[in-house]
Image 1 (cartoon, rainbow, N blue to C red):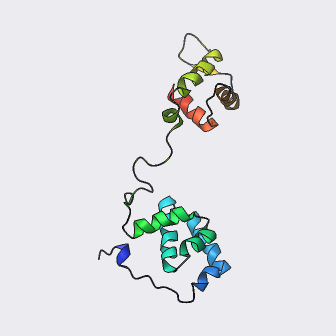
Image 2 (cartoon, rainbow, N blue to C red; image 1 turned 30 degrees about the horizontal axis):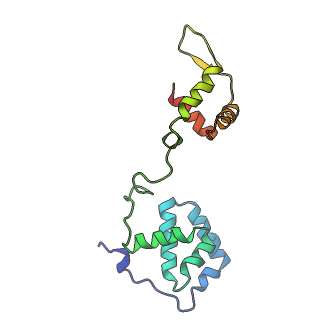
Image 3 (tube, one colour; image 1 turned 180 degrees about the vertical axis):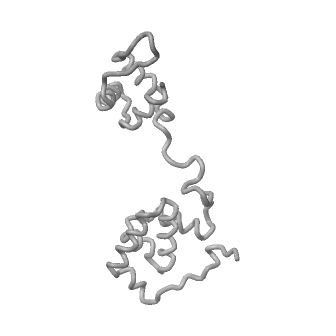
Length: 161
């Protein structure tokens, strides 16, 4: 049986959902949300906020730590007002932060210039390395106006092999 979310009648608690004020229940909710991916967290909190009348989003946001905007986006998804991500994805295709090299086109060449100045290895073999730590490479990049995390620097170095 295929039922859309917006066809489900949500039982509203006339007493204002006193179960939301139960500390044990709040702790269980936080524990459950900690095991969920982004999409599941958004939809669970949205569903809970739909169970409440006025102020539901704010109350659920206070308890769960999920932003009101995220809960609102989840409500729109559940009510069919917003396009959902594919069932196997937490986000729509192309969503999320862009890679540093996509945002900063020159970072790879600047990093390679820094590494080239401190390159070591056997000239007869393709094995080369740098004597600079990721922290020192990060500082050198920052001096040249290109901020990047150590993980980004590591990924860029592996990519250039």
